[in-house]
Amino acid sequence: MSGIASDLELNCEGLNCPLPILKTKKAIDNLQSGQVLKMIATDPGSVNDMASWAKRTGNDLIEHTEDGGKHIFYIKKK
Image 1 (cartoon, one colour):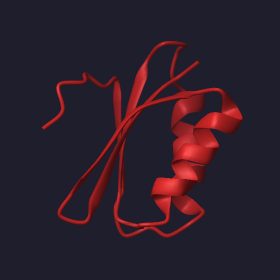
Image 2 (cartoon, one colour):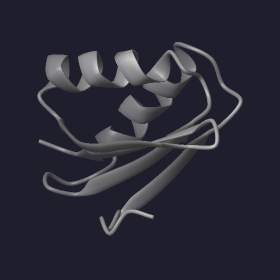
Image 3 (tube, helix red, strand yellow):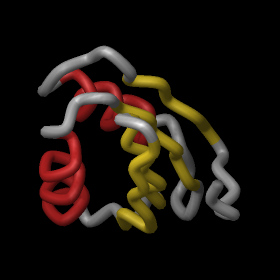
């Protein structure tokens, strides 16, 4: 269990690319700079997708963990 506090949690379990990225973008757009989004996905492709999306958009992928097929991402809005 991560000790990172999140301002918003987004559940993308069961969704395949590109939906987790699209929903993450929409959620991040609603946050203030410096706030943290916790996104949970089950699509293994989301690991590479989230890393490249964060790099491309300038948002900070603080942490990624995997627990029983669930990928948990913490993204800080730039």
